[in-house]
Amino acid sequence: AKKWINIRKSYGNFYKVPRNQTKLTIMLEKLGMNYDGRPHSGLDDSKNIARIAIRMLQDGCELRVNERMHAGQLMTVSSLAPLEGAPAPQMPRYRN
Image 1: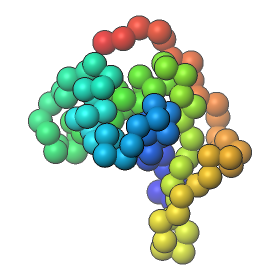
Image 2 (image 1 turned 180 degrees about the horizontal axis):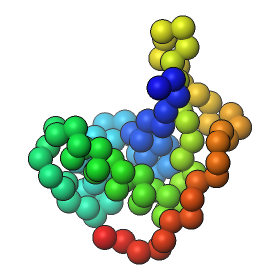
Image 3 (image 1 turned 90 degrees about the vertical axis):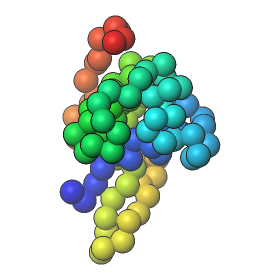
């Protein structure tokens, strides 16, 4: 992967919270969700991150690539950069 979405950055920017409030368990708690699964399990962490992303989309966030690798260096991608790929799908308005 050379480009990706850092959910912690997207969450902090969208909900206007400082970086110290973007830990996985804190993000879930602030969204009224419980952690599902075993903490620090790669699969369970991924599922919980996906739940956060879905909620952000439901709340109107436009998730965009915000980090990339270039010449072996981690770089931040400007939020002013044009969107890449297909538009985000429209998510249903129900909550789990």
